[in-house]
Image 1 (spheres, rainbow, N blue to C red):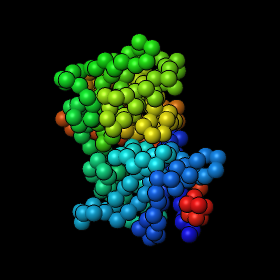
Image 2 (cartoon, rainbow, N blue to C red):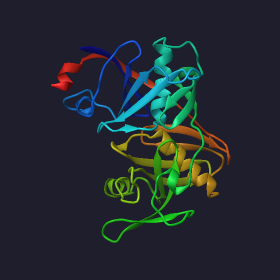
Image 3 (cartoon, rainbow, N blue to C red):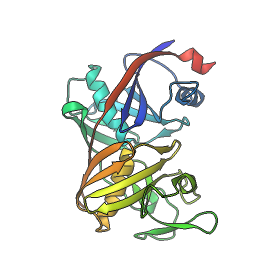
Image 4 (spheres, one colour):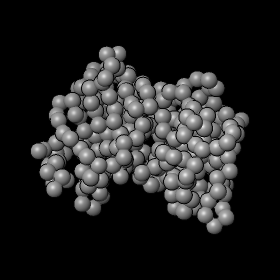
Length: 281
């Protein structure tokens, strides 16, 4: 069975996007893992699937699968690519759409030159909303790691769970060692995305993210939102900041008690057709 797909990226966070409104397919975990393989498959950080919505007041349903085949609640860079995809494939004529995710409704709006602005919803901070195991709510938590190391973290849910720690320099942060330990820490029963944030000044941060089920990526939209919000609510950042990631820059804006706004670019890489039987054999 041949499936049409589009390869896209948002700041190097790369995706395969499938329209499963005008075509049909069943994808199990093993099939997705094989598709994600960068040597024997297509290769991607996440698979994005466009489906009909479950509710009449929503335009599309947006499903996200990590490279390990696990389905996740939200992907910020992905939703920007999703919005551009459905518009360019003429699945809608709207430039502002409502999109159903496992985490709730998000509202991306197309701008010029492939840029997309997204209402990412309200951040959540309570431990049970992450989820994060702790005896009481605190501004910062101490997370014990291997070899008697520990990190001071903030926890934020931006539709998916994030742990944010401040580091002096993202270039020298040991993300390769600490990232996997944070991601699979026993205090995060659903695992977590680990963000390592360097504050340059009140309007500029640098960020590296070790993503749950993927590893370190060139960019993470929800991670950028979580890091910015963490700094803002602690009085370390202004209400609008530039987040510099390895793949490029995002603009994040937030006021206490309001939704988070993310603005950033998208890019088409190529279109193709895949034989699903190859990945299912």
